[in-house]
View (cartoon, rainbow, N blue to C red):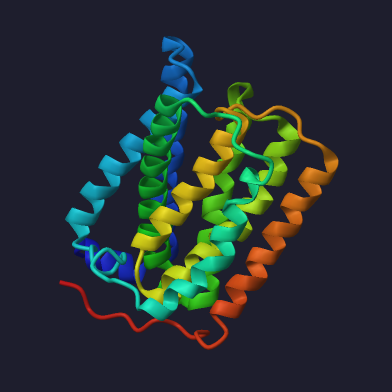
Length: 251
């Protein structure tokens, strides 16, 4: 059985395998960081650099560039669909921008672009694409779970506050649901790379790094509400796309 036939015949197993690779990379780089003590920002950069390189190799091996949305461009009218997530992404700047050093801003921008590319490649490129044969809404939901679960790993090593980690994981499910819905609706992954990077950029700049300590209860409740709103928006985007995606035989 060729890799193409295997992924078509076993969508759940394929998605689980892709998720396992992501988790192993996160844990492996995290373990190395505990020895080398390079710091959380370097750890994030290394994790996503490894994921980006590994993901490109997987895409080349499977010849999934088009299937994963890298050869498609969206229609101009579809750009309007990105207004709600972009607006939410800019909320951390409502009270100003704490980090103003130019080199810091450039470093954060480069890091978040890398994160956006790597995570979209795996979660909306590989995992979502492998699951589409089981049905669009189901694939969207499962890919969102796959996107949310690795966020729980941020509690390791004290990078994130435990309570915030749980709340952020819930919010990440909602965001992952919307991102997957936008990927299905528009057919392209490129805009998601930019929007994903924007979410991470505004958050990192607002807090001055990737380490998150305890957050206020109103802020955490708001995060859960936003996550739920993203699920609702994702369902709205998919309201006329409920069935399975036809699968072509792969050689």
